[in-house]
Image (cartoon, rainbow, N blue to C red; front, top):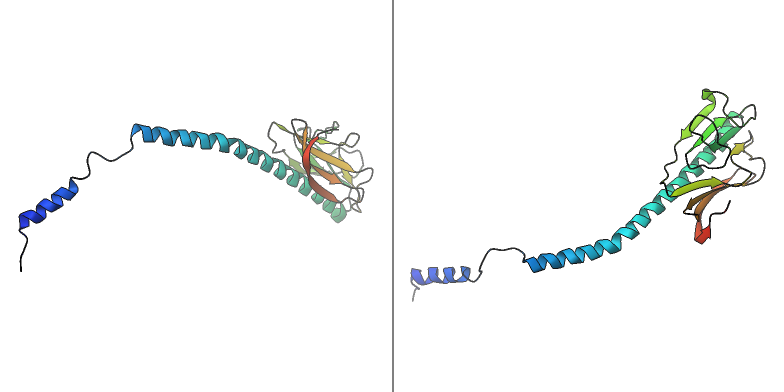
Length: 193
């Protein structure tokens, strides 16, 4: 049997290592191409991501307000005391202009004056988690919601609209029976009072 000399074997191994020349890494051209593709991807993705975040904010605000109104109805029925949800003036009272953008109060209203009489009457005080471009406004002539002890909402229906730059995103609606529902706006509708 014929054996290969050790020097030939070592030479062959060294020869296979010498096929790779220079240090590894990316060239300047390759790095620029990757950066250009990344920039294009970001330019396309960031606006749609921003839109998705704004839609989530709007949706969570509508759900939060819907939950507060349903809770006020349940409270009025359970305690047999009229309960009001109104836009907050951030000082423990109700705004009368129908702008809910700063938050809202839920309170017992035993005397029917539609304002909390004592700090103990206030059940909840919510700061609206709104982005500055979002606005919450109620139907004209109906700046607040009052539930009677039987759960009805006396008066006309109330709609609290969620708007961005005068475009309707959705609304929370309470009918005379006191049922609360929310709906997203379809298409691009104006946010009218």
